[in-house]
Length: 122
Image (cartoon, rainbow, N blue to C red; front, side):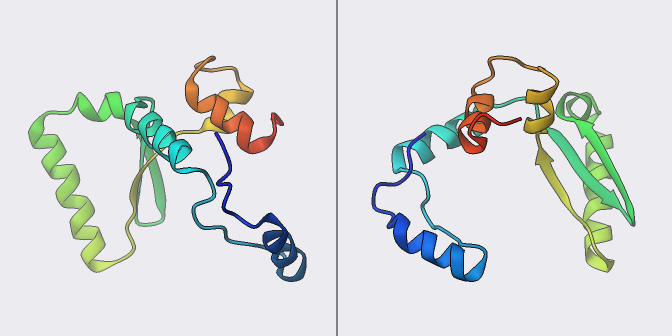
């Protein structure tokens, strides 16, 4: 992973110092962005996170894949129904920090990204 060499880090540092936060577009190089995209596309340890009202639920992709087509359609219809009438979310996630800390999936390429982002702090 490489930081985009076109970023003016002194401007970013000044913004961070004065505003307490900074948003940096295209933070990583194009090559690094492509590599990260490919890693995410190939990753298969995702969890599906969704809500039903105030309650949050998670299921592994393997569990979801094991559902029948009819069960998947019912699930999806429920998500769309709740989205039309209230707050709804549905996304994939991977608890990378938790996996690194508990030494799950050791050697997984995404863990190297975690170490790069955190400076190796866990």
